[in-house]
Length: 128
View 1 (cartoon, rainbow, N blue to C red):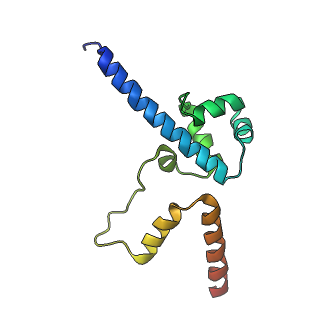
View 2 (cartoon, rainbow, N blue to C red; view 1 turned 30 degrees about the vertical axis):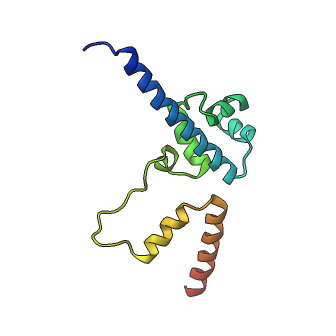
């Protein structure tokens, strides 16, 4: 196998840089939605606050070993953390109104999602 050219290495690096900047932004947003400081999240992960700041700024690559802890602490799926589109079931026809609403709720900040969830719990509790 031929070694990579400098141009190929630079292209991979720029893609990585963009990915890790975007990942850092998603981590920061989710952290704020959970009402955590960088220091609090860093402590939960067992890392320094400065390292957390570098992760969120995309200046350091987030260690793959931290991903399971991050998704658990930030209450996200791995797909959400990585910025992947939501998985759809193989169903024919347009999405139902309820599915559309659920998709809209998924796009809301975590605090609004919790509010909607509490409202649904109240309504469902009254029906049962």
